[in-house]
Amino acid sequence: MMISLPLAVKLLIAMALGAIIGIERGIHQREYIQGDANQPATFGNLGGLRTYTLIALFGALTGLMNLYSSPVYGYILAAAFFLLLSFYYIVDSFLKKATGLTSEFAAVLVFLMGFMVVTEIIPIQITVALNILICVILSYKEQIEKWTFSIKRNELEAFLGFAIISLVVLPFLPKRAFYLAEMPWLISLLNFFHISLNPASLTQVEIFNPFKLWLIVVLVVGLEILIYILSKIFGQKKGLVITSFISGFISSTFFIRSLAYKSKQDADLDYMIAAAMFANFTSFIYFAILVGTLNGYWLAYILPFILVIWVTSFAMGLIFWYLSTKNKECISLEAARSYREEPLLIWPLMKFAFILMAVKVITRLCFIIFGYQGFIWSSLLSSFIGMDANVINLAEMAGSIITFKEALFVLLIINSANLLVKVFYALRAGNKKFALKLLESTTVVIVFSFVGYLLL
Image 1 (tube, rainbow, N blue to C red):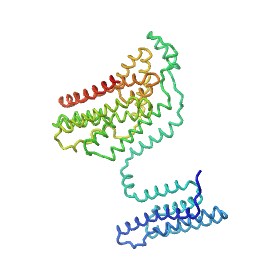
Image 2: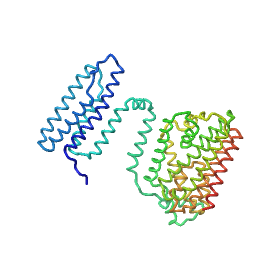
Image 3: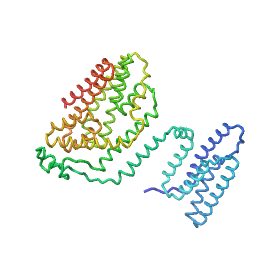
Image 4: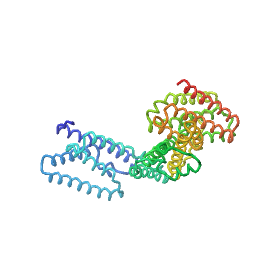
């Protein structure tokens, strides 16, 4: 239970909040005058420390009237303040030939905060936090405007699309799961191919849970948007480690393929192998985030093996980095960023949802028909489509349909296949020596991961 503060303390807090905004507005006004020497010091100046402190006090007194006297007096004081502020805005706009409302809105908010501190309509801590947030928004005007101007139309549409799929579509999707047992036509199709199954076992094969499936899609898209923002912040040509880190999140396979093309013209292969291994290192951070969101217990179980992959990938990257003799600030994000020029597109979104649903159905059906071996082979084959869907599928099955250790073994298998696919891309698209060096590095990662598994 919160203890109400004495009235005098509340008045001091209200005045302090107004003073903070007043100081910021005063600094802004001084910078504005210094930037335009032709303007007098009082031009367009709503006020500074004293004015905003008094506005906050006026709001606090209005709150006092509302609490301890007739609310009518409070309404009169509030109306007087807003009329005075409106009159000032009209005159000031006429003189300046400008219609900016920032300082006036700040004055209104300061008045309301003084009112809220005294009346405690919301907790005082929240009012103080809002005051600090307002001060930050006011202070970082140039940075906010610069950031706003850098936003492209397609980026805004992408973020609005993410808001729609996460806040509009997701809450209204049904939360029940749909199983193969509810599809008689599919059972008839299996019988046609002389595949006889116990109907009870089909209840293990979940086709999809609309809410859960879309929640995973929202998670993946949210991570991609975060990565896209990071790539925008860091930009291009930010050094080997940062570039590889961002590219590993975006697509380590595509990044390595772009390095393979570059290896035909660049003699410093060691430097590019280092970049490839750093990208592989960060790609497993992405997978760890996915697993931790869906199955924290399995993440805790496999964390030692993920650490092995992280350490070996990073160590191989460091080895080749030190072997390199080239300037270590030359690899650009340009090639990797071209893989996703926009953070969100509807078609890739639906494609990922379909792939995830297909991987879940095929691998679980193979598990029922052919057992654990069938599940391994189906997961291995489906890993060529994409690692994300398989990692999500394993996270959902671990501890329920298969054991943690069985899920870990499949994860190591599909990770090994994914690494070898990268080597295959490098062999086809790039310098053969680059592909051989990449094979050496990935082999070390694969061997150490399986050694860790065998020692379990």
